[in-house]
Structure formats: C-alpha cells, structure tokens
Amino acid sequence: METIRLTTAQALVRFLANQYSERDGQEQRLIPGVWGIFGHGNVAGLGQALLQAATTGEADLPYYLARNEQGMVHASVAYAKMRDRLSAFACTASTGPGSTNMITGAALATTNRIPVLLLPSDMFATRVAEPVLQQLEDSRGGDVTVNDAFRTMSKYFDRISRPEQLIPAALAAMRVLTDPVETGAVTLALPQDVQAEAYDWPVSFFRRRVWHIGRPVPEPSAVERAAALLRNASKPLIVAGGGTVDSGAETALRAFAEATGIPVADTHAGKGAVPWDHPHAVGGIGSTGAYAANELAREADVVLGIGTRYSDFTTASHTVFANPDVTFVNLNVARLDAVKHSAEPLVADARLGIQALTTALDGWEVDQDHRDRTRQLIARTRQIEEECFAPDRNTGELPAQTQILGTLNDVLDDRDVVVNAAGSMPGDLQQLWRARDPKAYHVEYAYSCMGYEIAAGVGAKMADPTREVVVLVGDGSYLMMAQEIVTMVSEGLKVIIVLVQNHGFASIGSLSESLGSQRFGTTYRYRNDDSGQLDGDVLPVDLAANASSLGADVLHATTADEFRTAMEKAKAADRTTVVHVESDLYGPNPPAHAWWDVPVSQTSALDTTRAAYETYADRKRPQRHYL
Image (cartoon, rainbow, N blue to C red):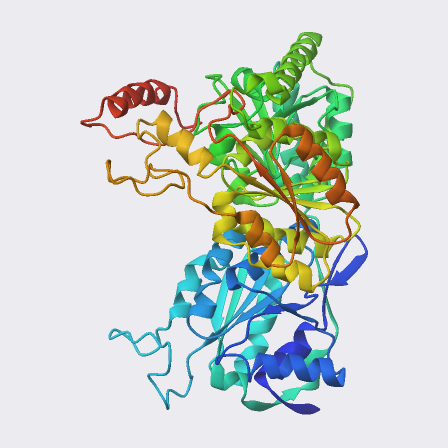
C-alpha cells in the first residue's frame, strides 16, 4: 500500500480539500475553505498545514481569518444555509477559550440542522506537560477537557488522540455533514501535539470523494394515506418550513397550491418558498404570524406541514391550530418531525413528496368557499401591513421600526438578501417582509442568536456574491458581535448593514412590560442615583463611530426619508456600508394575532405582575397537545 508521511494536520487539510457533494447531478466542494483564529493550540498544527498547502499547492483549501470564533461559525452556517446545506466550511480555533467560544455557534448550527465542521484544539494527548495553559483539571477524570462541552451540541463528536484515528473519524464526519436528517455541527477535537505528529498515511485516504445526497422517495401507501386525508378536508392549510427551501421544492409547491387551491402559510425558514403576492400565499404563521395565516390555522381541519419542525413560535405554543378535530399530515425527510402532533407521516424529500401528492390529488381541489375565505383574509392582511408602514401610526419623533421595514421593502430588489436573527425585528419581519425569492429572507430563528447577523452577512455574501446582502441588526445585537465588519472589509465584501439604534432591547422590553416586569433592565441608560436602577439618561454611545472605526463607510438617518436616501447611496456603493438609523424604542409593533407561552410569576407583590398573570392564565387555557 502506497503511503505518504504527513502530520495529522497536513493529512486533514489534504483530505478536506478532496471532498465533494452531489445532488441532482450537480457537484460542489463540500468543504470550500477553513475559517480560523490561531493560538498555541493550532498555530503549529493546522496553521502550519494550511500555510504549507497554500505555499506548495499540495491542497486547495483556502484560509479565512475571522475576528471572533463564534462569529466564524455563524458565517459558516449562513454560507451553508444559502447553499442548501450542500457545502460547509470548517472552523479551527486554539486551545481553551478560543475553542469554547465556538460552542454557541455549534448549538446554533445543530438547532438549525445546518452543517459545519468544527476543529477545536485540545490538550496534549501525551499529557507529558500537564497541566498546560488553559487546561481544565477535573478531579473525576484525566481525559476530561473543555471540548467535552461540544458533545451535547454536536451531531457527531470525536477526539483524535492518535493520528490514525483521523481516518475513520474524518469519514464519519463527512457522512454526518452530508446527511439531510442528521446534519448539524460536527466536531473533531484535535490535541495540539497530535496535530503536529507525523504518520505514514495511505495515499488512497486522500482520493477525490463525492458524497451523494439523495432524495428519499415517498412510500406509495404513505402518499395515499396522506392524500385521503386531504381529499376529505374542507379547510386544509399548508405550512411550508425550511425543508421546502433546502429541497429546492419551491416550484413544486407553487404548482401544488395552484392545482389544489390549498393556502400556503410559511415559517421563518420557509418564507419565500411561495412569493408573498402569490394568490395562495397567506404569510407567516404562529406567534408573530400574519392575520390570514393564523385565522386559517384556527379553522383548519387538516394541516399539511412540509419541511417544518413545528417550533413553539410556529404553533403559537400549541394554540393556533384551534380546530378540536384538526389532523396533521407531515411531509418531512426526518421521521422525528414527520410524526409530530400525532400526524400521518410522509417521510420523504420535500420536492418528491409534493410531486407525489400532486399526482395523487389530480382533479381534486378545495371548495370555492375556502378559496373565497382565503382571498378575504389576504386582503385584510394587506391592509394591516400598509397600516404598519404608514408614518402616522407612530407617535414618536423618530421613525418606528415598521416604517424602516416598509422603506426597505420598497428599495430592495427581489434577489436582495435580508439577514436577521434576534430582537423585535424577526417578529416584525415575519408579518411585514415581502419575500419573492426563497433565498431573500435569511432569518435565523431556530436559535435566535444575538450576534449572528453581521457574521452571517459575511457567509451569505460569500455564498452568492451576485446578491445584495442587507444585514438588519439592532443596537443590542450589534454590541454583542460587530467584529466581523473587519472581516467584510479585509475580504473586500460589499455588505449593507442597517444598524437600528433605539438605546435598548425593544422586543424584550415590550415582552417584559406585557408580563408585568415593567421593562426592567431592558434599556441602555446611566444608573440613576435616586432610584438605584438603570433608568437614568441615555448613554452617550456612538455606534456609528464604532462601525467607522472598524473600516466601514457610515451613513446616518433620523427620518424615514433620510433612511430611504441613505439606502439608495448604500446600494450604489462598492464596499461595506453601515446605515445608522435612530428609531423609536416604543414605536408600535405589528398587531399580535397569536400567543407565545412565557410563564408569569404565579404570586407577586407587584400589581403589574398579578394583572399579567391573570391574562397569562386566560391565554393558556386553549393550549393542548395535538393527539
């Protein structure tokens, strides 16, 4: 057997450079590059290997420098999401805090079921010099390191304590990264001495490998059972989730809706699968969903869930599907999701499943009454949206966030990508954003991770440089992780960052108030000597100056008209531009059409909390399991 002598890190780099994925005859690099920040755990291991590969040309695996370890995982997730999970970056970090900084990103990737390969450095496998710098000494076991925290966040975890262990571990990692059901964060912990240790590797380990990502075919009898339920439905509703987009099932879904007349609601991850102005599109569903979608959900007797995992926001904490006789049919590649809510499961690829249902339901369509009801609800929903965009709805001097979103809807093109994750904007966006392209709405709402937005803008732009990428970020999320602006600048990426500053946490402040907690601890203020609380004057924080110091061009706006002008300038620019817009912290949000279960204290000395609990108990009564 022919062998070649390489270090473990050199072997891993060469292996990763030769991995490809394929679906529907289209091949792409499975691992297009490596994000990294070097330290004493990986600078002489993976760092040296990447340098050698770039210098000698022995492996094509580009290196990208991030400014925050969590941020580079977020950038990788955004890239994979834009590429339908067919391509995934690797991320390397130094021993100790560098590696554990990636754990939040790992949780986000696994929760969203998006592939990313994590290569955290680890302690010495030989233990000859321990305790080394940043080593966790656990009296219960000598093999425990901080990287064990990745185990619960990863879909696959292995620690490479000998060079030859890399062979089965690397192959297993690729298997999980390319599995539509089991994918998520994959972690290979790499002790720093093992990274630099040499071994005689079989040359065949580095051969070009193509990982074929198939489309599971629906079982005919399962299709017929699902079709039978739909044929007998009088008020059916489709809930399109992220699996619809990952599968590339948008065209099939539109054809199915047009053939049957079934209205289509969507989750955050499924928005854009059917264009917002399609006659059967009824908008976002659930806690922050649109009027039409939630009214139809309350009436629905059969719900066809496609590629959705039914989070509590989608079901409005098990209250929005209110018909006592509601039945679910779940089309999903994962059986875990297909059987939720005692559903009739249809375990299959979304596109193939929709096509099979279209054939099975040939000639059947909903009653005219249901079509008319859907049309009336859509018309009312459009009125609500326009009311939210109208300037006279806001009573403050600064524009409301809804006005800002209305302006963005006007100035952005269909293929422009809006990136967001946390705060009040996801709720506003689910009701008000008018997506016509399945990749135009990039809102991470499985983990809703503050700090995702700017880093994700990097990954989204790298995934498709032909699209304008617009990051929407509030001041709270910006302050948690703005460092990747530097990465945008260094990589020459043109991204527009809309920085909405309201000097506080708008969504949590509003939630706090509704729960009787009086917006406690949700504003950016000086500590008040009289009250002892953080309710003094507004802090003199200049986030625009901060963005400028990180290398971005900055434009300012304090009115909706100024914001429109600034956005036009930003679109015409050729480098990263931050549009800093002041907004009203107390500006009105879109009206609520559903509920979200956030428990309120059952006993309290505060009148506001006692009143909130009465409301909570009343709203909780309809909550139920779907059996």
